[in-house]
Length: 393
Image 1: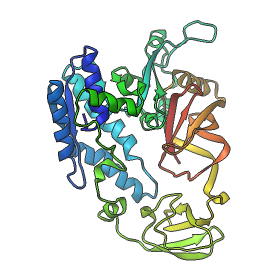
Image 2 (image 1 turned 30 degrees about the vertical axis):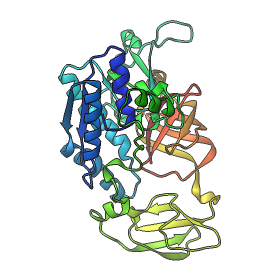
Image 3 (image 1 turned 90 degrees about the vertical axis):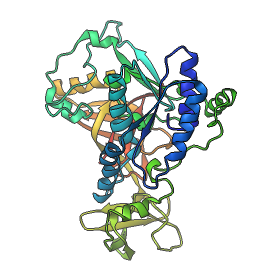
Image 4 (image 1 turned 180 degrees about the horizontal axis):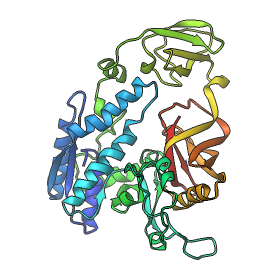
């Protein structure tokens, strides 16, 4: 329970459904100690619902696994996604582990996404062999399919075909958060409940009002949660020193100087201090030489890419995991038609997801704008099922 309306309604819905509900507030690291009000709101909701309430202190782990991950990402010149890492390491990592150790059957969160249990079958109706909930590499990294390639001989079990969990976009597409959940694996999904995924945001607020919950009209959090009112640039300035560098046009002409390549991201328009007939956008970052390249005009071809390579890929879909296995065994390239996005809230775009010897890439039908290395590329079926994702190289 984060102290927001979504997790408050989750608790109310599950209690009405007959679950024995326990509320948990996760105390995580924050830049401006902005969590006090959220904790108070979560406690008030738990009191109204008459459910037990606990606080899990993950402050140190959050700093090490999420905050430092973001800082190091910017230091390397990429644009990391701390929300994805928070879900992977904290909510569905530490929180899930601790909840299960305490005897919980499930964890539930306020994410707008739907989950369905699915029996995998071949097109002829017969059960298919399954990869298992996940393939572990010798180094224990079960999320990275690149590591799964080291275990191509992993045995398949038809029993596992009965344990597939599929993630779908939420009913409210404007609030859908499946983009941030692409790292989840089957062993995690089997313990997850996402009750608000079947509701519109307006319906969730109405439920909160009917239950007299104090969070009914509370505004949604915006931006990076642990920054509070601190700007990203001011926060990064505490850890990354200024390093003056050149700003060049796509033709190689000097247009100005910047404070350090890590303070900027692909597609950024403001904060460059460069005026032109048309607005300038960051088209490329050269971290090694501390150079930023800019393109004039929002339709400049330099701002688009139609092919991207992916790392740290996780295949949520059973079918994709089987295809990946077959690609390695038969040493052949596989292409699957998908819908994909490279930014949160970006409209889904038709693309080919290409698997070749555990190398992965997306080839879009039409070039995509502002593709930032370090961000997530997530892909879907036409049915709205989120089938996998990875980090943009």
